[in-house]
Length: 340
Ligand code: SF4
Image (cartoon, rainbow, N blue to C red; front, side, top):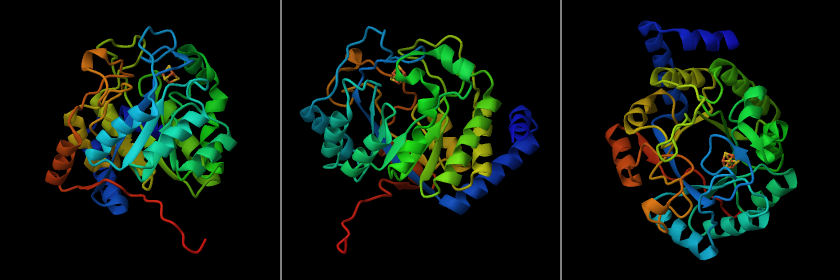
């Protein structure tokens, strides 16, 4: 597999790239039709006890820290729901102390008033904690390994739970055993200079999960490094647009049924044009600051990273319709089983 990845990433023949893109496009249509699911992230807290050198929320950064109260959650969630969003991704920094399971459950119980589908991107937890969250209404998690290169992992994850490579690596297994229906995995493109090896490990991790936990729906994400308030993280490898497109196409051809997410880190032009090649899910109208939707003015916000595509949900839906895609605002709804 590594050979195939290396070959694809280093191949610059326009004809072969076109063939790869055509294969990816056909598979996307065969397995997902013209649908694109939409979701929005909501940052609940920016407290973090980990020190990841590339992140705006790292514990040593002197930013204003706060977490949303119940009332503030209602305000932010209502705003997002009024935009038409039905899938929400709740995020926090990684602080077990400030945002323990009880706080997350509180957030989920507020979210259930507004959204049929609720996913979390928070600190990795134990299986019993995932079970509790699943029973309270969470149906998916996002957990990126960021890089599978252990040496690089250690260099950029200096302290806190995130520094524990193995605990993070086994998180998808614990979540799957707890009953979660959807798991999103990924790497932070550019963190490790060897993209081919990182991809190879990610694919192997996914194949392991598919084999051992076949009942789960998986998706992959390939976020590229973005500046934080304009500042670029030193030491990151640049992943250019062509390489990014190759990664999406290659992933689609190797995993025809797996979801591929596209975030607002990517600029409008890329987001509009790459959809055909395998994307199944995209965020829209996003804000990466706690309280960023309704509570704080722009200058007071402390984003986790800068957003490139700032179009509101309405504009994204319009763009999808013009391009003959079907925007899907909810593909999941819990129903009461009357016979249970
Ligand atoms: S990447 Fe996550 S764990 Fe690391 S500093 Fe940022 S919020 Fe904390």
